[in-house]
Length: 217
Image (cartoon, rainbow, N blue to C red; front, side, top):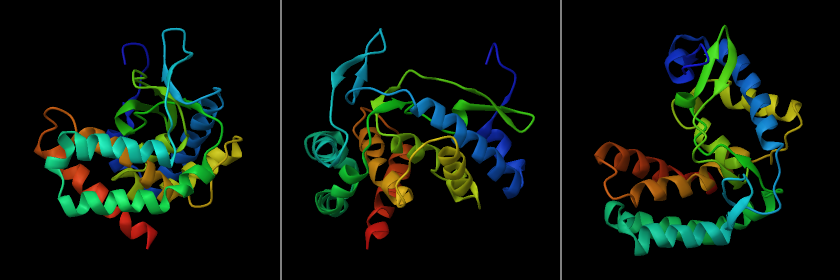
């Protein structure tokens, strides 16, 4: 923000008409396709040389193991209703194969791709900030974060994002919207397992997790 003039998307979006935001979403999808064009041989965390340092799975097996670590063995289980925890674990066991079927080759994932980290200027994307969480993984991680409420609830935003992404050469499964919500369980479980996430974040995580099963009925 010291070097690029612009306004955070989360601050600018409320004043934009849905049509203008949809056009901006299309441009944002094109930028996201350029980011995801950087490919890796395997998923994992990145080292100082931007090569994969610690490989880890990101499909159904990886998600099941991560949820178990955060919500069963970790602190997260005490912050989420036990019945909801069981339901989510069962859902991933039943529907996780959809993630495996949709996985492409691992790419550069921003991992915090949301309205607070995107600067816009004159209706265009000026900068994408804050790359400290970046890793090699599945493109759906970035689609999951940018389409959370409130942006994801705006008319035409998700459609514009996907259209811009595909037009720029990116590939998305047809049911990417619900798969993004499924893969976002990684993030919400991680939030719940933090030492002190705060009540507001616990509430957000609970609501977002509780909304996922209905998408697969």
